[in-house]
Length: 348
Image (tube, rainbow, N blue to C red; front, side, top):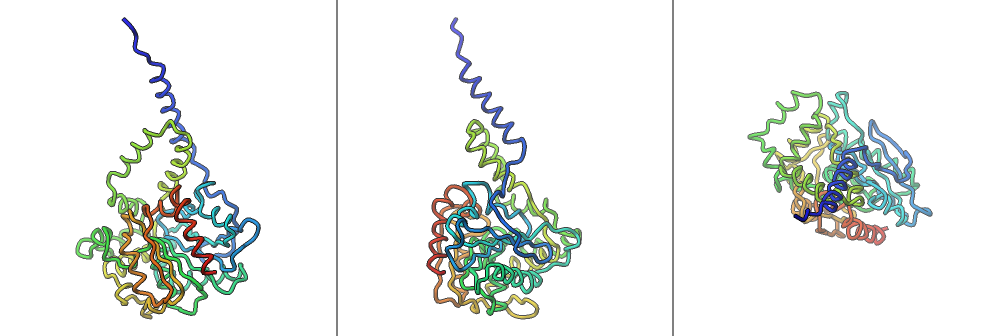
């Protein structure tokens, strides 16, 4: 009786085992682009990524990402898939805010501190370092409502342009408003249990948006474990997706109460340091970007910024991708980053 060939099957099994060993082994190297510390405020650090061959734009780009939740090296994930690396090659002076890792000592840090103090301070430090008069302020995710509030709180801030990417403005749209509904989500009772919002609590909230996400990721790993190039990208992204960061308890209270539960920003009812926030006070040119498959910030929530601001020069782009893939990955490198660079050059 002829014996069935097993060599090919054994080879595939070996490649699978080697791939899984690699995926579950040492963490992938990340955040490898050259950068220098250009400023700080509290635990926040302001990093500058020098353009290759010197800056070719006069207006620096200052990025304020989400606060807590995840590490900001998603913008400098790995060589070839780094937004910071792309900007350096394009000659665009780039500053990135890393809010730091919060502890119990930050329990009283609130929205007023971020909007009225830290964002203005870090923006002005970036301009002093760049020796520039004004910057393109770039808000990403949670950074959009925070920077929009800061620009409306103080219209004299030196913002030549405003770039808002996948950031919620109308908080009535999407799944998070339903998850945090005031009738079922007692934010006061929750935060009194902790000195800060634990990373595990935040992770669980995001997992509720995609309960099968871990299963889908495991399936993709098994299907591609024999592909070394795929594994390199997987390891870097999986490292980022696994490093959750807690939130200061007062900031979490303010974020849920004023934004998700009461939708005060788009209604013109939000107050910072007692002062009402009117988004019509933002008059700089605006580029607002939403993602077609964003289950965290639906495109309609992001697009609400366009009708709310007072800018004459304003544009909304809905780009293919999800909340993260619109700024990181192959599609972002091929489509999104060049579109942003073109807009920045046109508004320098």
